[in-house]
Amino acid sequence: MSDETEIEASSVTTPDTSADDSAVTSAVESAEEPRSDTTVFRVMTVESVVFDLGDSSPQVHLMENEAPYRHLSVPIALGEAQSLWAALNRVTGRRPSTHELTTAILRRMQADIIAVRVLRVENGVFYANLDLMTPRGREEFDCRTSDGFILALRQTVVAPILCAEEVLASFYL
Image (cartoon, rainbow, N blue to C red; front, top):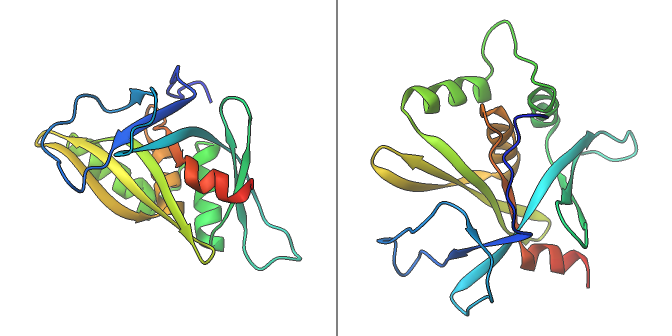
């Protein structure tokens, strides 16, 4: 995909915005020594969408962009797997899908997806948020992980997918 966003750092940090949302210095910051009030995020790439007949859920395979190149598999529903495959391959339907419509609305409203952040995993369920920059400022929305991936890939310039280090570490003990 030639339109991918390039991020130089192997990880990025974001402040814990639950305490103070007032100052956002940049959309994606390069990582420094993690502080106690920051979460370290790793830049990930969607490698593939796989449906194994022996498993009830398709899997999205993500790979870390830099060493140690860890992989993460996220289960998603069949409909979202089909939409993600279409987004990966830049396929558009004759009529807009929900994700294509949402992308068009965001574009018309002059909102850009800054990043999709995979925040945590609990009991096999992945939690993510969609980080937007709008004319009114930065907005964050809770979203299904699969929807975040699809919307990130549907952008003119693919938005980065960021995964919290804690999530990756929980799979690589």
